[in-house]
Length: 594
Image (cartoon, rainbow, N blue to C red):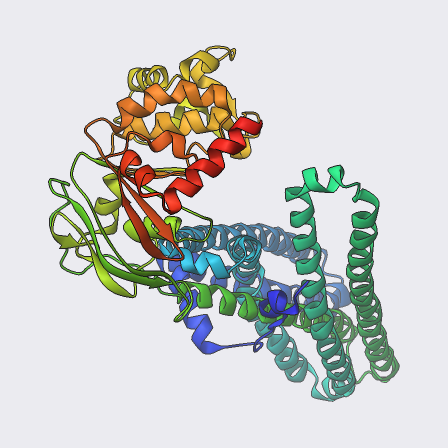
């Protein structure tokens, strides 16, 4: 398992980065009224918490000391109202801030998903799916915690802390100074906790990333695991990863188990000092009982925001790390884009022409070398060759999944990069060897969200490609559920659905990339008639593994090591006694031996 795969997960970043925070606030800006209400509510709650001990002090020192029952009743009623008000405002604060976080993160997820959809295939070649899913889910959720319980709560905690300090000094500065003796000790404990928990959380994220990656790999490869009896070996590997993850979490539990009791102990020391000197002051009539009670309540409240700020620091740090990873993804520009001044949508009234095409996935490692050919309108051109000859690369260039290095590909006389990407791809129908089916039903996998394709159209194309027979065997027919990636369908059935999908979209340019290579002989016979109907009078490019399927192609191009080796019809190429004939005889003798 390569350490580079998890490199990004190890990045912690700064605890606070103003540049990142400014970008994050962009998503809060549309809901700034909620943020303002949340901040105001947080300050009001802190203010009410400051007022409650003052009411008790005044009640003890005045109504109780003078035996004023009416004053005691009024102050008790005021205390109860203020307590209920604190509950109501605190509830509103929590609800509003979580609402703000959910709305802002919803917008961020949509923008992030939209951006990922726009990225070029080369980006996905180098970035694992698991990492991208982490960005859109886990990292965004961390930011939600920042807005829901981080920034605004910090403002409330600081206000409460400063308010307690100011009020204690105003009420009795001598007692306040005695209480503040414990502050350096408290901040020392908090700093020690922050340093250690930072490293522990880094390791937890790293271990979790490895655990998730291994789990995803095993679930995806379960068929191979079971057939090669690797269950026990994989279980042992999983247990090792799981134990490492558990150990890091236990370290975090230990740090919290030390930190919170330490804060409580410091709190108790401060309270003991207060009772010793404050009690002595009460006996000597230097301090009122109400003042002593006020300080006892404030000292209990004093340590709460400090404890909260230590936790909020970790939330802020995680949020900065997550936002850095998210914005790094957001700042990744698509390599393939539409032109600023695009040409009119292609109509494919003329030929598709490749002229002196050179292409490499990696620098100077060319997989296509000076390739030139023409696909006349309404004709079928087949491309054959050994694995690695460059057949699929031609299709990748034609669909503009990648851009070529040298040469040109023209459609209706204009280069591909002159057209808008959606308009270019809207005229292309692509059927691949590995058919991708979405979770849903059969009809939706044929329609793919295009509302103009009616149920009647779907049934028509189903009959045309001979898929209707097996579809009608299902209880719900075209509404039959399709599991993830078509797990409940055979490879041949999935291929037939791919043909039905292509026919339903009625593309001007049809591309078949090894579309019949994994279909059994019986199924292949079923789709031969459908292929004839599908290809008739349609501009088509067929990449073929089975040469028997392209005998009727108008032209066959033989690729070899990235170059065009031979060109001609099936009959002409057999007569040349070249590479095509050798490929054909190899397959023919192979079939004879079956």
